[in-house]
Length: 215
Image (cartoon, rainbow, N blue to C red; front, side, top):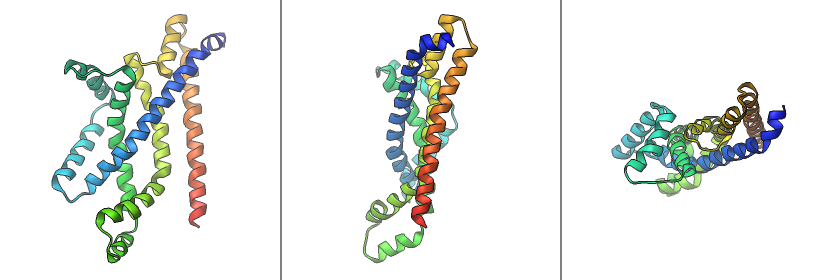
């Protein structure tokens, strides 16, 4: 435990980096995932096909490969970003594919009768989607979005392979400095558990409150 006490500030900084990276990714993936979900549900062949191909490619390739493409591939094309921005772009590209499926299921869960009623009142499809369908869908999928946030906290650990100073990088740094493997890894796993468990509990509370409000 002396090792943990000595390097605790490093772990705290790494945990903060992990949370910020995950939160920024979530904030970006929700609107972009919504747009992709709308494209997936669109009757426009080009939009629909693009959304399908995007989701299949991203979900069918490893996140690590996507990170390498952004981190090493873009500079080869003369496009340069700092480490944090590169990590955000790569993880967001991945998360958008999964978020779009969450949003799509939420949109499809809204009773079709509401769309028909809105059209009967003279509302356009776009207005119906913005004012009626999307707000209800987002409310329905709020717990799933929270769970995606918890997943992002775990999945972003992979960016440590690029030397990005997240929680896993802090663990690797301590292992290299102390030649101790078990303790820093166990502590990092504990911190990850605390963060994801806390978010999961908050999601459960929100979900229960939403259930009570509907009754």
